Image (tube, rainbow, N blue to C red; front, side):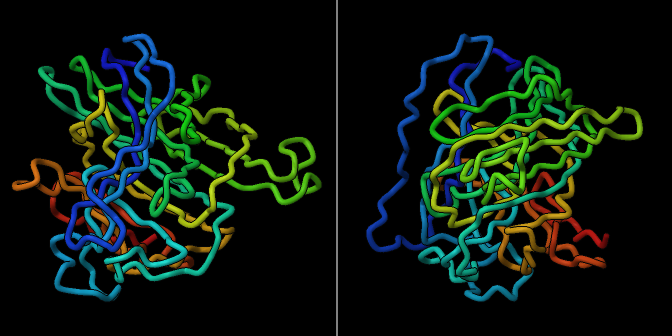
Amino acid sequence: MLGHESGRCRWTAVFSRVALAAGIGGLTMISIGAAAAPATAPVLRMLPSHLLGTASTRARSSTTANTSSPCWASSNWSGYALSQTSPSGLSCVPPSGQTYTAISGTWTVPTVTGSSRSSSYSAAWAGIDGFTNSNLIQAGTEHDYTGGKAHYSAWWEILPAPETVIPLISVLPGDSITVSITKEASAITSPTMCSAGQWLITLTDSGSGTHAAQSEFATCQSYSGPGTSAEWIFEAPQVNGRIATLAQYGSTIFDLGKANGLNPGLVAGTGGEMAQGSFFRSQVVSVPSGPDTGTPSPGDGFAVAYGSSAPTAPTS
């Protein structure tokens, strides 16, 4: 990977506390347990670490999903998640009652900026699990600002292994990225790809007005997570054991989302914002809009923006 930091990892959402759920303690780290990479090739992971029983500052006065304010707050995630059950203390996340075996989504790679004196990081991805458990299968794009320059890449990951970079995909700002992750029910449905029970991960860079489309990347992998959640997330990764400063990414739109092959029907007030800083003084640095209101598929996407002001929900 680009840059000079080592031990860079992805995490699942680290939620800010409002009320401690029964049986859940403070910030809990999951051991990484992978060999260290050279200093010129930082290791990236999404590492589950939750404080459940939490809500965003703006949602603390509401326990329903009918508010347009974000439901939950995290120091490293912003976006939307579907959950089989409502996490304790987060009744604003409606229980779906579903087990998730497929997710897909499309987003536009943002342009990141930053300071030559410090490094900042960001990633966009779609995945299954991680919202209420310690498992995760995902794929997405990385957009960092290090060494006074912006760096972009594509990757896939299954915990507890580190992120695997996809070198054949050359990511540039403005590119349209589509990720699909599906558990193959039968080898007959995909005779040239995965065995029954394996997971097919695909990532396609459709390019932009100035960048040509590229070949689709696909890989078959084993994964045994319970499939209790599905997510579309913009994130600040972990670097050297700490959640990184989020790169200034402007804004982007997640669109054409599907969970188990269907429109996820995202509901206003169920998304989450990212707040960074100290326990006593944190600042919202990334916030999603309400769900897409356009036709023919309202509720299949959203916008997300750097800063504390929610962007306007997309209409197409």
